[in-house]
Amino acid sequence: MSNSSSITQFLLLAFADTRELQLLHFWLFLGIYLAALLGNGLIITTIACDHHLHTPMYFFLLNLSVLDLGSISTTVPKSMVNSLWEKRTISYSGCVSQVFLFALFIVAEFSLLTIMSYDRYVAICK
Image (cartoon, rainbow, N blue to C red):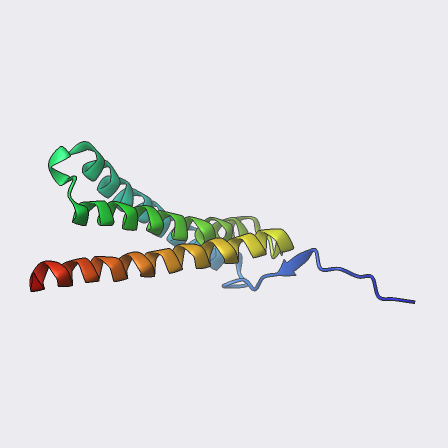
């Protein structure tokens, strides 16, 4: 007889066991998430609307803001939902997609920062 069990969900650890601390974590994460959305949204809007800012360095900053929005949007909303509704699980496919997207955004962000630093190096040396 073969073992045919499969993993469908992972259990997550909570930041705190008391409801008051869970709500505090929710409001703290909500504030951080909204601040990141507002800041990056303002950067994106300013660069997109002002034609004087359509230079290579501002193009890189625009893409950096988009990548930052993507990386923070993959992890923080699920953490907020878990804190608010006292859920302790994440599906296998949700976990895989969250890890893949987060790694993708972080690698893209590091690559863009490397390109930006090389661009500044060339601009200074030439």
